[in-house]
Length: 427
Image 1 (cartoon, one colour):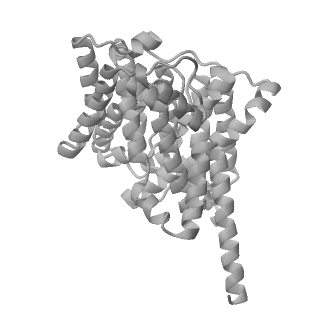
Image 2 (cartoon, rainbow, N blue to C red; image 1 turned 120 degrees about the horizontal axis):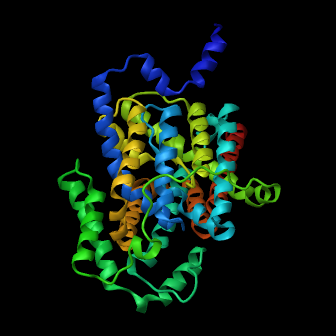
Image 3 (spheres, rainbow, N blue to C red; image 1 turned 180 degrees about the vertical axis):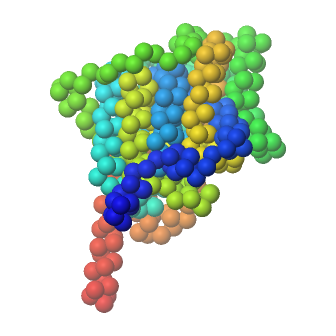
């Protein structure tokens, strides 16, 4: 085999194949099983919460974590990547569902998967990694603010007269107008979830904080007969297993209609998955294969759409949890998906008792942890970085993610060109 052929084979070789070729024993399997179980416990409430916040039923979040999560790990260019539904996608998914319905979302996710696969096959993964750091911090903070705003209705148990507006300013205005309808019991449960999660993370960091908090809120709501909305009252519970696969409607008209949304999904999915892989590299000293990672994300999204799931991407928090729990190979991520399927098969009826406000509390915490607050404060102090950060953040919140990223990248490029011109002119 020539050097070029060997390099190409390495680029497109899943890390699962590499890990198995290096030798995989019973000890490795035990460590991966413990890590997989740990991640599954974290992913269970998160997957349902993200799905509900995205405007779909909680079972679709679980389908995404099970099917997408398994394929991401099996095909990933990173040893430790955990795939599933991500908070960063809430705004995009919710907007797509509102505009095109669940059927349109399936087409969008499927097309995004094809695009991610193509980007990886064309070896364009490195281009995504060159998005300026300031832009990344800006749109991440913007997403965090938007997620928080999207949870206020459920967190406070507000009753709106009409549908909740999508744009940020009208949403806040509508929520403020509905403030007199606030449900104190719902807010108390959401606050309880936040308090328990923060306390456990501080004093018992190895415990599954979010699951314990959500379980405590569900128990309190049931024992005290609190007048709050639950998964059961809103959605009728969740099924015991995966649905039959079904190819989405890929008619020409539907594809053209959702194409702009699919491009946004692709851009965010590529960025999020590669950021997660980079974080994993920093924690372990390993090196991921960016193009293989994008192909894995692409395949996972296509199959997730076929099983009724939502967008799949690499998730930084769950990937970090996998590493800290002792994950050794992609097998841990595959087992995490299997454990989730087991939980779904055995404990599905219990999900009906989970208060929606409790899951809103989970996502408020996710949004808070997502934003790089110290880095945001540092970057906003420089006039160039501050301008790029403000443009990205502001447009992400007030317009949409794609506009924010494009504006930030264009402004950063303009500043770079101006700097090079001044250096060349000796100014």
